[in-house]
Structure formats: C-alpha cells, structure tokens
Image (cartoon, rainbow, N blue to C red):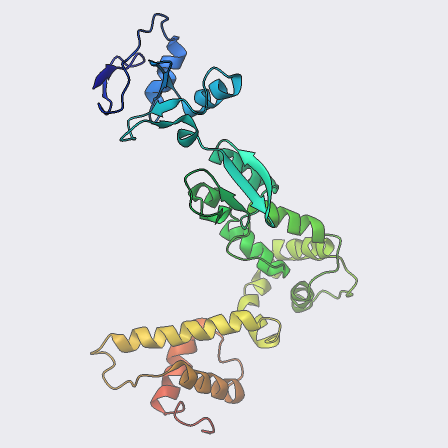
Length: 318
C-alpha cells in the first residue's frame, strides 16, 4: 500500500500484507523535525493500537520507548524493511561482555565507538543483540575502525619499544605512553641516544629519553645523523631490531619472486624456497656484514648474485 509521508509529502510504498492503515495525523510536524527527517537515512513508522504514527528517527524512537509512549513490542517499519518488525528488532539493544560477564548495554553503535575511544571498552570485548546467532568481538563492527590507532601512533610505539598490535586503539596508545613515561627508558631509546652521541645512564626515564631525542633530532646536526639511524641500527643492534631485520629479509625474498615472475627479463632464474632463501641470508650475514644497508640494494647487489652463484643449494657453501 502507499502512504503519504507527513515530513516530505512524498509517497512511500509499504508492504501490503503487513501494513496497517495509515492514521490521520492532525498535529502538524514542526519545521525543524521535518528537515531532520528529510536528511535522515530513513523514517521509521510505528503501528500502535491499529494506528500508524511517525515518522521517527532511531534516536526519537528510543526516546519514545524510554518514556513509555511506544512499547518495544509494537510494530515498526521503514523503507529498507520488507515487512513490519517489532520495535526492539529495529532499534536493538547492544549487549557488551568481557570475560564472560556483561559489562554494559548500549542503544547505538556510536556509544560503542565512544567507549572504545575513551578506553572503557576494548576491541576484544564481545557484543550481542537480538537476532544474532553468536557473540562477536567489537573489532568486527565497522564503526570500531574509527577508534584504531593511526600509523603514526604505531610508529611512535615502535620507536619507544612499547607493545601494540593491529587492534590497538588510540586510547590504548595514550594509556601506554602515560603509564610508561616515568618508567625506565627502553633498550631502543638507550641505543638511539648512544648512537646520537649522548651519554646516558640506564636509570634515565622513558619520558626524559624521549624529550632528549626530540631535542637532538630537532637541530640540523642531529637530524642529519638521525637520517642514517634506520639503516645503521640494524647493523649495530641486530638482536634489538631482529623483528625489523626479519621483515626486510621477507621483503627481499618477495622481491626476488616478483622479479622472477616477470619472465623475459629473468628466464634462467630458479625457483627458490623460503628454506633456501634462509641459507642465502645466513651466508650473507656471515660473509658480508652490513649487506642490508642500504635496503634498496639488498636484492640486486647481494641476494640475486647469491642465487646465480647457487649459494642456496648447499647450507655449507663458502
């Protein structure tokens, strides 16, 4: 059936099999509310006592439920539904649990986002609402992505030697820096200060180390020296930056496979397994210290010549 929308005066098709008769609305809708509904994604209509009332935004409908004007068991419909559904299915309550116990109920996903941003909720908390067959982690909600730490924040955590993963939030970044600022400087901070020619003791705090690094890098001489740090640190402190070295080697191996796949440019290059690539890396580490600097030359100047020399065939090749 077709009903007239009291906000925009347009016509709306409502599924005939379930639609109640449109009520007569005698009170005109205020202009500001009319404009709000014109901008909203859809208007929600409610069937109550055989009459249709509305339209409502989700926020207005929740307020009407709280006030008792509308029951959660009344029927509701909007243009994206194929049939009328209970109000509680249109504006479901989101239950959030942690450690197997419910810690809160929320009316709107935006409230979930606020909780993730202020740190009261965590990405690995679970949520459930009516109609779901199982609980899911908050990180699966599309809106939760807005609370994730930025690349720059993760880089800062990495530089400070602080733990993080792909689900670390902005709030957790702030908490990590805040909690650790008075603690001892990290091994990576001490290594960088030593590299920059700054004598320090191991009792220097993390915050003071960060402030000193910022001050040094801020002047021209320190900035120039810091420019070589990303390459030199891998040679000078291989154990401390083993994760980055491992990532570079994997990237070198991937570059070889991509180069080999080009075909005509590399017709005689053999297929090399990851285990065979490790043999080459081990050989280069032993015979060519510093071969990973500069990074751009790792593949062309070192890895590729080793492949052509068949270093990968024997683990004892010399």
